[in-house]
Image 1: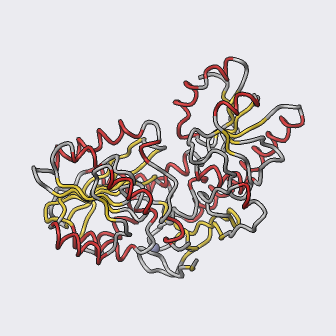
Image 2: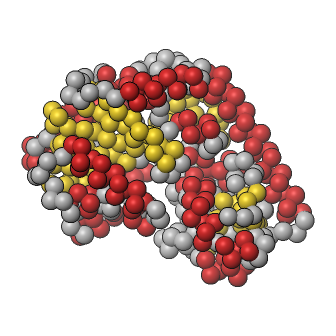
Image 3: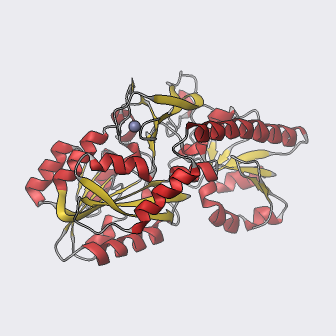
Length: 410
Ligand SMILES: [Zn+2]
């Protein structure tokens, strides 16, 4: 781990701490039973804001090799993502691509998105540092380089395949520490009329929905449009369109091109205006938000204690990375919750980092019949409510973990 002493966009040293979630283990470092006795490495999980460009960021940076080379998250296994990707791909194809163009995806995972471009006979190339996942992608016919994207790799791709008409990065830009290298890499690899399009959670969503649990060590920046305009300008690139999409909460879809290559859509200025009127350019907005999170912790933990004292059985639903931020910040584990239900076989039988809750499958969870589920996978609320109709029908209820709201009916 190292500590950044300057902002990764504007190099300012005026970084102010606004939220302290304590020292936490890595959110995806699930444990086997035999490892429960060993000590777990923890790292400070603190959000800072640069008071010059207003990028919200972590300054404690865990080595990317530790985080991403053996990754547990397979995109295709997540519900609802396929439809989202299909529309996404169709939009890019219709607006920016011609036959035989090169499409490069950063953090391409198992190739779920690139498949859609391959089906339309574009040239495709994935880049993903997770060796286990890229091996799988290659075996499925998605050519994938198992490495981190950087300037030298961008030069290499350019040499072997030419410049890319589309470079795509889904939930990957927020994971990158070296934004100067990212800017140079995009400048190198992007075709003169090409588009770099990426999706990332929108900082405003974290404020509106109090989703502080999306803070974990993989997410180094919490993005908004204004700081990003500052970033790309440094490399003679510019944001020419922004869409707000609801994939997993409210996300930004940002379109970047070489300066002057595309007409600038009104959505860019509209987003920056919204951010200014929302107060993202004021430190007190962040400080007020942090206060709400502290209050929310008190309220939800008290609610769970009260229910437990009444003899209710409590468990957690979903074991996403963000769930571990929340459990560890709230400091709730086996003292209040019996287990965590998660559908992913790769997590079942393991224990959550920090709190050591056992992850079980649906059948086991049903047998243990909890009265309340703390809904850690809140981003799948609708899908889960529909699926868990029988649980609700027999009197079960869900608790939203960042607000304590109880949901009894779909
Ligand atoms: Zn800055």
